[in-house]
Length: 563
Image (cartoon, rainbow, N blue to C red; front, side, top):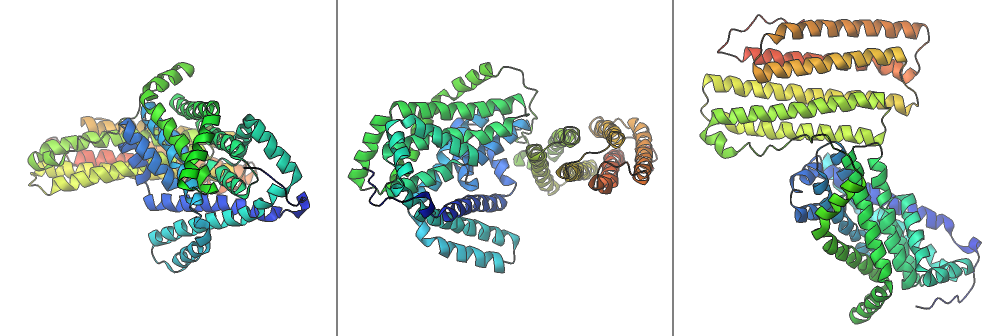
């Protein structure tokens, strides 16, 4: 394709407002549609990621689907790294998802190649009507998806109409010529642009428009696409910073895959260009779809080559980023077999109890994350980890409750009925502790967003309550697990001490406010809420212990008094 300027123009002749505004609208549409899709999928999105990634091929398929759902391989990779950081997924599982995400991200370029943009405003209208008149929340989420889809392509259209003028701009003609002669510059440009906007779909959309208008040759466009694949790893690297060793390895694996794929693409660039030209002439593929085909084939071939080497690459990354990972949280609840529930209800209840104990370890981890969030002044990534752990708690709650309800349909004796009620009550108390941990993080985040922190004295009092709560949680779980009712008196003493700590912390807080020593007005307003949440979490520990004792028909239970 020869670039010929029929009429030279200047920078002032180009509608930069339309280019920038259209680009921003395109990015907003992608995000808006992705958020809507995630809201429709709900907490099941992460559940599916974890459930179907034990097999490498299935993990790749999950990566493809999740990336299509969230409309971003960067976001899909960040979610995966978040699960790894939370200890909910192994590196080998994450590797397949990350590889699959690279194929899923080609969907946007394919849709652009189909010129869906000509129908953009119809989608905007339909989405807007659904959002405006939809009664149910899920219906409005569907409206978000459709509206975001329309805005994405409308932004692309108005951006593309103005980008066409670049083909007549002398400076850009020279730049495009240099990129054609030195493809490595196109690779670097694609890497930098995608790294800045953290989205390869947007970069490739720009390339498609430039190529269609004749402002860029295939020789320059293809390295730009390869560079976009490297630039998209930036989000994953950011998501892994400060995270676990496995999270850093996952980000490293993602980066390694894309860098190797881009390098191979550059080495075979002349042959790839000839192949694309041949297939385009043979099938009469229009320009924008040609770039989509470049992107799709590049990613598919990369995955085909990479998939058999997943374990090799994982081992390589482990040597490249050495260290020992802490033991992963075990959340496999496959032991809860419906057949056992029907044939042996007593055994099924024992299995349910083990599942509840697994849930308690996740709740314990959620509390640790909430405490660490305050200590380290956590940001959005750390907050996302807390939310992911809470999603897991809710998922486990739903699964165990459903299993217990299937057991309750059988003919249970008195003892089994007591166990059924006990497990159900413990689940709900644990789930509530998880909710309160999220509340704490919200309060801490409010203070951090205010660019402030608690005073040293205030933080010390909160940390003391955290430590006491952790001890109370372990004690209550011991009472539930081991039926060690002798621990109940000690737990009640801890509860009284927790009440005393809360009272003293409140009084010291009011004294600091009177002396105008509070570091932040936001912190001052939510501090009592934080203390109250911790005290309520301790109450739930007492509830677990009390219902454990009350359910025992074989042992003499002590007199229960809750202070």
